[in-house]
Image (tube, rainbow, N blue to C red; front, top):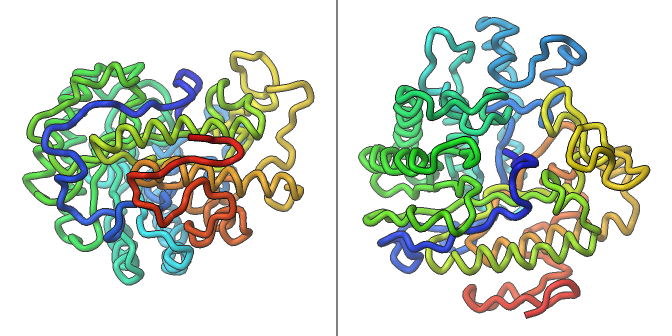
Length: 437
């Protein structure tokens, strides 16, 4: 889910035209009949992340070797016990009440991460299956409450980025074997079959989440996109296809101008906590940084629909295990990083992730930060907040933030908005204490 310290502070949006893919040419429903996606991720459901639901991993705290991801979780428990615990988790982490609440909060889309192992598991892999009936139950609730889905292949064999959210933390081995690529395509086709079964709910399929440009061949990423695109199109011809920018800079992307592609969306992820350039910002500078983010997505959105598929209100990396199970935080210096200490002398993680600990100025800032980011990402084609809820980290919990007035409810109820929501989408002008055009 998250870009680590090696990544640039701003994931730049690419300036390349995909033949036949300009927004004016696309025929699919977009944004529930409008041109803005406003959604959240159902993270932590089908791909475990220790920081989202720490209670699942707490029994291994301090152990060696540690259980750090879904691979080691199932390996430690064995398949029978892992299946038993995960079925309990799948049936309770996302409920119909959650879906109803998200609809009531004025959202129109949900992005649903899922791992390849829901569709293909080899004998030497510890993963368990059984996710699909629960996924279909969620899609049924979404149909009931008029929400639309992006099915996101969040983890692929060998890991595309080495993050725990790929299913297996550690080395990036996705491109080391053709079998890994073939099984990834098999999983994409599995998602396409579900899209074909739920054509009025599933609008899009993301071919792979956050492939790591620093550890993968760019030619290999492009080849996978091409092959997976064709395979998905054979099963679900009208579904929109989402490709992640792989953290490449704009100058690296002209080769991704693929003749004949249609109904394609670019997904970029923007966080303020995983690299020094953003983490050290003052509150005012966090707000100002959204101005460049708005320019990036707006400029490219004229060529190819561009969504910000992940963002949050976090301005520290203090959420427990956010950087990985057993790891500390850059913010207070408990995680080794380039500053060799805290962000500033005395920086502490105490109270950083709890709404109950935030004073009035902090609450005002987070409301401004939410609106500033919504404004920025709606200069493109919209956004998905990460995450719909968490066990502990309130600055990543959309439902709790919205219910406490720190995120607009509905999303259009903005107190500090930099532009009129009634303006034609293409004529957005930014004008606020932190952005001027």
